[in-house]
Amino acid sequence: MMSLGKEIKKSRIDKGWQQKDLQGATGLSQKYLSQVELDKVDPRFSVVKRIARALGVSLDTLAKEDEESPAPQPTRQRTRKAAPADEKSA
Image 1: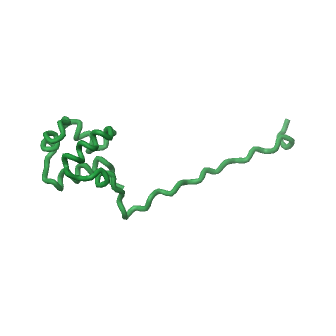
Image 2: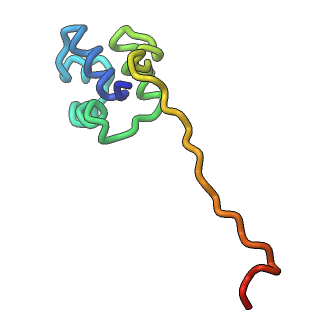
């Protein structure tokens, strides 16, 4: 699955924009946009919406999962059963 930051960067590049273009369209600083693209910050939903609108893509596009990689399966944790009270050593 591609990260949110990578999807934003891919969409920006596909549009032929540099970060300064996205900065102008969103009002967000270039430094902040760089941190978002590098996944160093976790932007608020309202910021992701603003970026998606500026890039002309849907929120689904930015949050899409890579169809080639299967979803992670939950792992079972083993738990040890406690010995009955009468079997515990005193």
